[in-house]
Image 1 (cartoon, rainbow, N blue to C red):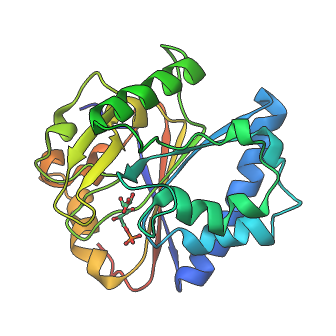
Image 2 (image 1 turned 120 degrees about the vertical axis):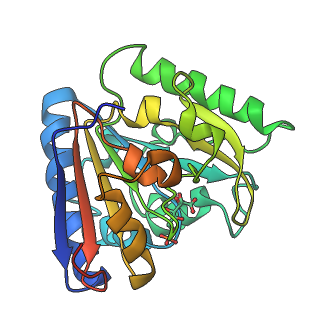
Length: 244
Ligand code: 6PG
């Protein structure tokens, strides 16, 4: 695994301050990239940490970001209906997408209606490759969280998905509820231009220390494996996590 040149860490008093700072940063990043490229591709994270960020983007920045040029993807999805309480799509739709003017064609949810999750993963990979093409960078920004044991997206410790070197998406069974997931893999994540990890809560302290410990193997702490060689990774963390 070739590592990028740096991992930047930014610390904030609490999740409120962290989310407000990330929102301001994302607003500037989107405006800059849209001016250059005419579009912005954003991979959203699931879980609870990013909800406040999404809400701030959908309210404070409702009219300040060119949402019609933003394409929304997901880093992973629970294999449940999109109106299920556990759906990452549902969380993002309620906190952000229903508040902004992104055209329906710019919203690319991970499908969860195939009988076989593997077919859903293949379908999403086809969409992703059609959008980005075979070579070069992928997402302009990937938002990720991390579980207390070091998973990110739905790349869990010792999962076969952590060893994947070709496919961009995989259907996985994970040790969390809901267990059936679709996840992006390192081959696509490590071609992103920018990756932001949003980490809040003392229960994440041990895992984040392992990410920054050179002796840790990525298969035991998958968040460590997201480090695009040609990209920038910023760890946005709150002060509940002690120095590491
Ligand atoms: C998911 C997420 C997952 C999440 C971490 C952290 O589908 O649950 O993609 O990777 O980011 O589990 O979750 P919290 O933000 O809720 O701690």
